[in-house]
Amino acid sequence: MEIIKINENDNVAVAVTMIPKGTAVENVTALRDIPAGHKIALSSIDKGSAVVKYGYPIGKATEDIKEGDWVHTHNLKTALSGVIDYTYEPIGAENVTASKKLSFMGFEREDGKVGVRNEIWIIPTVGCVNGVAGALAKRASGLVTGTIDEIVSFPHPYGCSQLGDDQENTRKILSDLVNHPNAGGVLVLGLGCENSGIEILKEYIGEYNEKRVKFLKCQDFEDEIEEGMKLLTELAEYAGGFKRTEVSADKLIIGLKCGGSDGFSGITANPLVGRFSDLLVAQGGTTILTEVPEMFGAETILMNRATDEEIFNKTVNLINNFKCYFESAGQPIYENPSPGNKDGGISTLEDKSLGCTQKSGTSPVNGVLEYGDRVNKAGLNLLSAPGNDLVASTALAAAGAHIVLFTTGRGTPFASPVPTVKISSNSPLADKKSGWIDFNAGPIAEDKTIDDLAGLLMEFVLETASGKKVKSEISGYHDMAIFKKGVTL
Image (tube, rainbow, N blue to C red; front, side):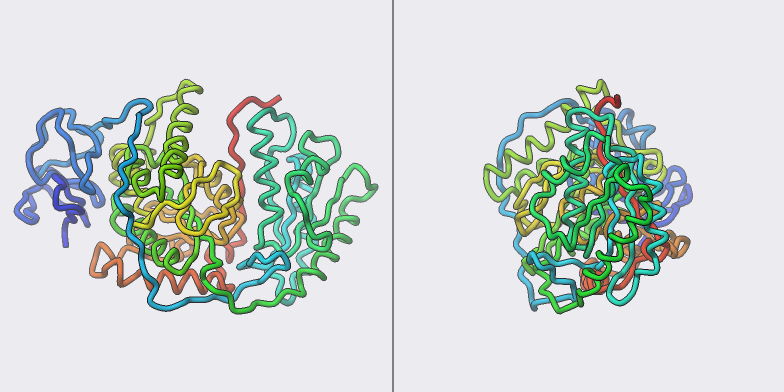
């Protein structure tokens, strides 16, 4: 297989490997070198006409394009512009049926939630105590025994000198993490003079188990490290009492994210994750798709899979509110894809979005979440968050995702507050960065089908949920980032 034509209506195909100039591939002769992952014209395309991939336009030709020519940013541009009025045209999304019930070994919490890890989290209320949080996590490493997986601190630069939405975002994300079931115990570490301090944060946390959540205001103690160690010891005693038990897969919540995409992402890794999403939804489980700016150009596909008009209207608001956010900052709505995306063969935002939304599979859209909301509906959900990898993945964890599936064509070592499974879109990346990549979807462009790998990915996720560490966990990586929109005092 030298090229892949994704949809029968496409007038471009994707090169599986580099096609040298003059090479004939499936009745088309390359007029110049076509890099792997990039597009070759299957027929002549007039200037101003649509370039079609995935069965949808991905932009307009900026010049006449000959059959066999390389189609990329030099002769193709986006056709997107402005805020759009949408009409609900339901398409009857596909409901996949489960052939058998699946399960994993998880930690059943006292409040009925389930965790896939039994970690102790140290969550600073403000960036001023990041160093203290890190020092405590390092000193408390000896408490990692029995069923306790790890003690982790989550530094961030916020919690003070913030106004409006920024301050609200910080409070919501921190409280969401405090309530996350992957944490068997949580130490909330404050300074004492910040404007998102412990007493205010408690209002966002709501009811909590005093054995599971402890609070330390550093300014109140002569030696905050000594006091912190006392509290962490108590948390370890509590968290150590949890054991893994068999749990139905319908309890799983999985976040869906991509980053550093390439021309193969929408052909291999993203549709594979989409198939996984459908399989988990069929089990009664939950998936969450985010990075709203990378839905632009493919949003109507999601809108028309909304379960009802209310969900449709929420999806419209999700899209248009993000467009207004760009405009309010005086920035172009469609300033995408990134340089790495372009190097990998993605030419326009439509090209990127149509590949990105493949991660949603074919299931109905059952819920729409604002940034910082926690998921409360099973099935496929959409979450408001930007495309930035760390911000979006943190938002998925805060929304309740136990695990994030992260597809990539370029590779990245980062993690999020929950296990972050890196899925390669191509085999060369998986071979080169074996210390980063957990699962290779590249064979789909070679000799395997999505169905061949979907079951294997489900098995991998269930193993991860049952305690198998992913590459970023083995490396000791734990990252978080909070969405910032406005001024800093």
